[in-house]
Figure (cartoon, rainbow, N blue to C red):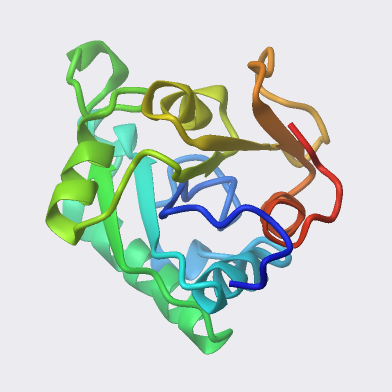
Length: 186
């Protein structure tokens, strides 16, 4: 730990629109494109000893746009691209349901976070919860963590930003601000 900022107990990061370009229901590994400096943010977390877990809603599965094998192929390509940049992901947890299914694993539900914490021996309290949608950061408020809401490609946020949530232009800006103390206070 550098000592320059607050070190999260774990980082729970959204996938589409946060780590990789969201082109709408990404179903082919050839479509995977890392967002600028996303790998740098993950690598910084790795360097600080913070376990990084992807938590993602994948309603394209529940809606029949693609199957779980297509999701896993896209995920494998994302992990490969991150590894090529020296960044490591501990695990990925995903909700395959459509929004109308009413499951408890779909964000902002807490089931996937609790499952990850249990299976990986992590603490959710004090964790970092980052994503490009308000639903990605709401678990931070429930679980006693820090939320980083990443702006969309148009520079806007997808809804009202809750208090105690850091606004950032991208994942790198939010993570480096939190860990290195470079602005972006909540």
